[in-house]
Image (cartoon, rainbow, N blue to C red; front, side, top):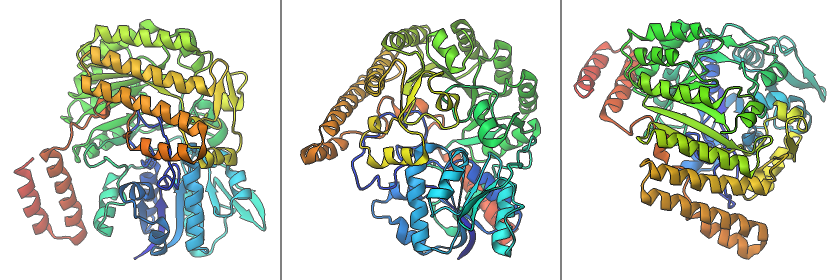
Length: 581
């Protein structure tokens, strides 16, 4: 089957199956596994725009295939593909090794097929990519390249020129050409996260290559996009207001209209999946969020919805959420329990304001309130980490029924290029060990443990300190959760044992030698995917259910029925499925 363009998602480290790697707690707080097999949601938006313009599009999660099947060969798989272009994401920098090696594989198998990349990291390093990496032919810069990609594909398939393609960087006569980054829409209603596209791909290609991440079928979660850009300036974040301005030429947040946000939530509900709302609905002001919530109030929303906030929402706003949605949770990242350190990271609110939001969420009916603390912040030391642990413990004692869920994790592995901390490390309390794209690639190519991957230290914490504190704080958080009845004795013992093994593995790796490598490989078998938490602590899907199966099958019947235009087929299948839903 011929495709115009195939989107390919790489693993973080391309040869992760061939060498021992201690990932540590790098992926503890995200849905994906340690190879970061969850592709960016932009794939769906980009593919939707291309389909609407008549292009035949496919999404293949190469990382997922490699994770699921130890015998899967990306080279052999790619050799069977027939496409006019490949598109490989390089959004967050931990994918740099996988992206570069996947591009090389594409070129080795299909030397005449152009390879396109994009994302925040690709945008930041676009000139280095085109200067030093022959496997990439085009870089589309910015956060909204749906229409530029359509224009590029028209040029590739129609023999046109590239000069008129906005946001494009490419090579011409051995020189790097950088077109104006002018596609920066303030209105993002024209972009769609059409999850039906995922289902159509499954039906069309008769496989699950397009699944977003490993546990998607058993623990699904779907994103609802409210904006592009950010109002906040967290020091280490490559998705901050400063970063978007310098990398993407975005000087103000582009909002999706409330009506379209509600439409997207209703589409997710058709799949009976939890919905994660991307963007603080209280920002830029509460009126935007209240309009969304007012519209949701009469829609009979029955799926879990997770709301993220960068600043503490008011109790009134939380009550508006409770009035509109029966099943909701809240996420906040105070970073540190020490207000001074938190404020320096860009989170400018007090512990009292945070505590009011926690109490307001409970009053409004929130099922869970997640708090994320970080290790590896400016001015953070052992004493301030101890203060954060004590603060989280005191909060948990107030809410011992599982409502409050605190987490702590290292800020790893890389300091985001384009962030304030990366651009002005001394001012923001960092020392960098990697500057270029190649520097970061080499950290992943040559490292064995997540300590090797770390691209920075802080003004108070060495790399060894960051690792040691991450492990000790992880144990402390697990013990406080055991005291609160959130995890069992068995789970606490499992976490303590895994952290002990993980510490030993770092020691073995640093000793080096063949004996250490063999011990390292053996020790890997004792670790499973999550290190410092129980996977169930971040599960909003309530496991697999017949209702979700019925909803997904019903949706498939609807899409398939439209495809073959057989209303009788659709009617019979959905009537049967409704008996089970």
